[in-house]
Image (tube, rainbow, N blue to C red; front, side):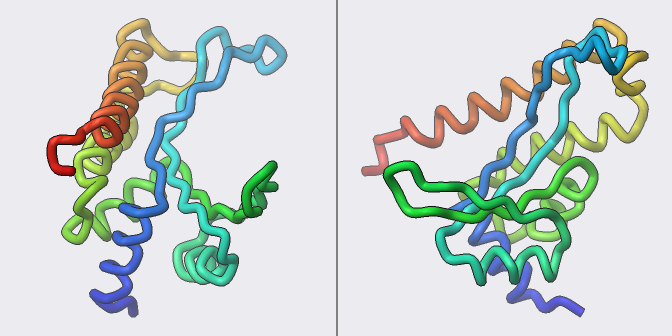
Length: 152
């Protein structure tokens, strides 16, 4: 069983090294999709592999290697969809910096699960608008977080 310190540690990694986003893929005519597809994702990146291995061993997910191209090489742990929602709810009380992003992500995923998303082929125009609204909300929260200088 995980301890409260595990939740706090993961929240700190998400706040400092994490990225919460809704990815958008172009329609795929070969797969028969006419609309873009959307997926909630959470990545945590580090140049120190043991942290990433620890996270994936504890919480599942995938590991991606990223070549540095002028910087240090790094690894990323990644989760998608409902698993992101579960992780964010798990650590929510301990999040500080990415708390608002987490709330948007949780609401997005819960909305999908509760019926407004009908799969890639059955999405209504309203579904597509909802996806975009949430995706843009997350992008805007990131812009604000990085441009706020009144605390410096």
